[in-house]
Image (cartoon, rainbow, N blue to C red; front, side):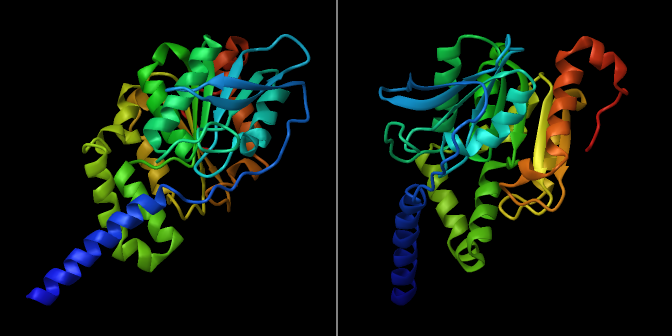
Length: 291
């Protein structure tokens, strides 16, 4: 009995340390400077002080609107350049920032979906206008949380590589990194997180937040996504009221490569035209497509 108590105590302490460690995963910034329009490199005030580095790219002509793009865990603003370029070519102003503790934005301990959302909200406040909001992975989790809090600021919502339920998504993520780690330690790490965040993780699951969102939504997901398998996208799509969400599945793509699908630019353009261009919308077939 004493041996089992020692093993249990060691396991709890180890998983508690791993819970801290997974919040400190080394960052993997990329370099991909925008190559279109008029590029501005700016700093935006962050929640609680500090700042967020951001690109603002103005189109050559009058903008059709503004698109705000949020990157995922461990990356930086440049990770969204390719996606922003698609919107730039459609005539939109694009704004994409590095979350705190990413890129050259202000350091911050223990980033999570709440804080990714705070950074999206900081940029929304700075822009002070309705936007098309696009998030990838952790940025998608932050984007849907921000959209649920500020429905008047969101014209269209794009969610790429997003999980359906927070705790289930984290367990899946840890299994994709290492099956043994995910199965042996993942459930307890997620439980420690839930305790730390005051048992609020279920409350910010995208499938729950989706029920409060009434703007058009395009869900983008890689067919071969191992971090959050495709069933996450199906569940999320079906959670929005009134069939308000559409799904684009990128053939053969993993968690981060959906935007490389040759059909991706047309899927974005079609969705935008149908929902923001009345004349184009009338020319489109009715119904909710599943690309």
